[in-house]
Length: 172
Image (cartoon, rainbow, N blue to C red; front, side, top):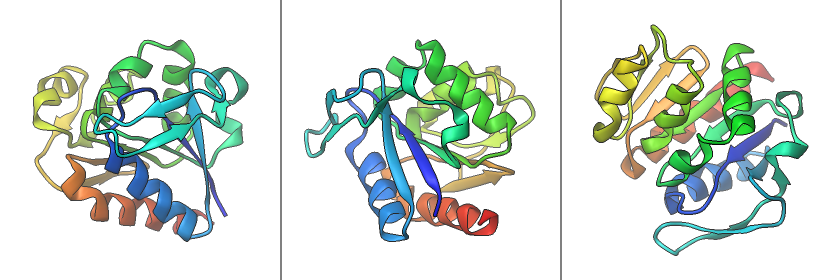
């Protein structure tokens, strides 16, 4: 069983949080909601999902987790200004742990400086940001470049989640 951090703040994309979170739980893994403040209630941008932060970023480090998920929406733009969130993302990528980022979550990967010579996808509007951060951007439902898993949008969630679960199975 893997322990998987979900790093989020307000206005995350509801389905991009809920689908991977639920599928990881169903597969016997332990998803942990990591936010800026422990116990804080967070609302998805569509208002369909409200979650509560399990642990604050100040209470965790990469040794606590086997993988990292970054849902999209407006949340990645908020958390990429937090040094702890950026540091855990960078460390998880550098330590070759699975890191799954969907939609606008590519912003966090750019902020963490982990995109040089990596192939990724994202929501099209952040393509230039990712290319400027050193990535090769492609338009596919899921891209797996080593431990880095990226997808474009909610329609890609099945492929995104399947790829994450596959990486976790290979590592167990």
